[in-house]
Length: 116
Image 1 (cartoon, rainbow, N blue to C red):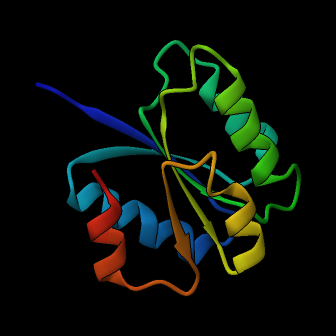
Image 2: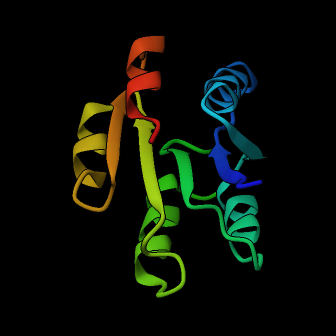
């Protein structure tokens, strides 16, 4: 059985649940983090997820810093990272490091389309 693991990094519980449910609909097993340090801890495990949904506005640690850490780390840099933000300027700043971007609010069609 081929299992796909994803990490959702989002501090808003309702959005985290929506992202998790969309990923599960597409066959992904989902881990969750609510801040940057927690995300980096989960990414440092031996079974690194190949997909991350990353909110750029987090209560502890910056999503942009998490993204920069992912891209700077040889073990993590190939992760498909979908960055999500309501701030179009921050999203634009992260776009060169992201695999894909989503501007909040987003809709179900956009979420389904962006999940590999």
